[in-house]
Length: 344
Image 1 (cartoon, helix red, strand yellow):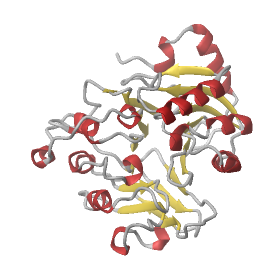
Image 2 (cartoon, rainbow, N blue to C red):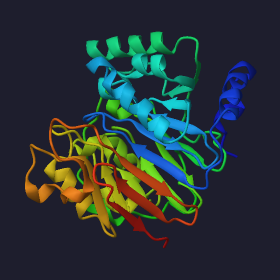
Image 3 (tube, rainbow, N blue to C red):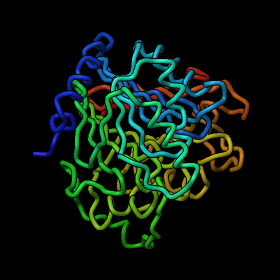
Image 4 (cartoon, rainbow, N blue to C red):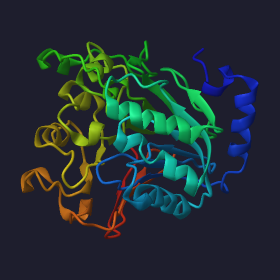
């Protein structure tokens, strides 16, 4: 039996977590996912059908609390007054930088991460120290591949953490991956990107994958020679759509129905990576948080599927509402345009 995250923790941490879960918003029938615009970083808010909440990453620091304010606004839109869990994928500034301002703006139950900083760079050491200081007094759990997070009605499985990954295929996965044959070998990455916490979130037949900023060599460990992950309905394009990530062997093996780029106006959505995702077998649509100003028209989607088309924007987001039968709806908050993807 795979360990369930908090079942293996000490009683004092468990006691801190359970009250947070008990104060969740009233039960809802759908899973809600908010892709919050933090200008090329990540902040993804997940609200379970039971009303429990998980925030993955917190955006940038500074900016007079811009990213923390946008996260709090999304939480209020979702009808929640606190964040039960905050998962930090890794310690780069665009993912962890917003924590100190976030804890001043909303109550947080438990922080989750991969453990100590593993990158030898001064800026990352500084950001990790600021994170450690900000979470003092909060419940804190170091996650491991294979662990699950106890959210009622929702599956949250840790796939990667601290450079390690699940040892066995997920249920229904494990087939030989034909796309590996043409995939070149990739070099080792010693940055925090390669240590990203990656998670698979499931709600009934619906599957959503977020691998943080995992880079190519680590992606291939999940995909080759056998696909350990299986297929997904919704894919948050790894590393904001940069071509340091998003190997064809992984992306094409996932067969995502819909992919979302959490890019900024001048960060992410690299043409090479965009094309790999675009050409993935079975893909129905791409959506972007920003028009990629440093790309070209052929490597941006239609404006109706872009949340922010101007560089100096209002920070509009993308919302996904999913049902247990696998049906899900994507909505552009800038225009109100939505599209329903029926169950398969």
